Image (cartoon, rainbow, N blue to C red; front, side, top):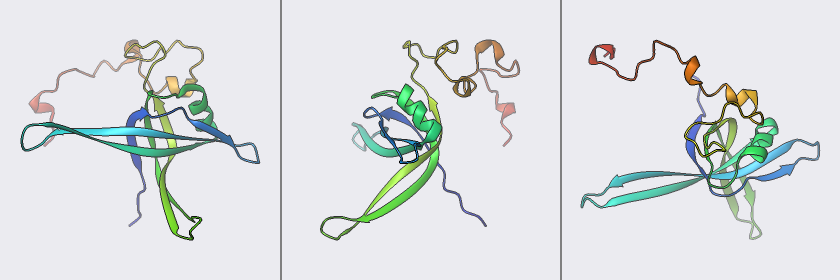
Length: 152
């Protein structure tokens, strides 16, 4: 049996991406994405807990992050977990786990509308294809699901 290392998060950037370049000229972007969960405790009080995820994007994804991502923008990231270790100045072993981005979908449109502007010439074609234009939606898709449609 093989193993799977797959992460999927949808959240908001906590700061603008930090962009660096390797000696060979490859770009790398580092940024943090906040996700949260909300619930009611036993007393009925609303609770919320935030998690902060460090994301590293390389090459083309780093270029997209540099151009399109900024603080508070909503983003969908798919990738894998990678843990790095090092020794600090006191010779203690330290660890940090990052998400290495393998795909990224920008969810905050420039115009503030709910949907991205698919006619925006600045948006790469690879990202435009991630969104369905209303005129191109499959006519078989229905907003309602009946109980007979559920296969179990």
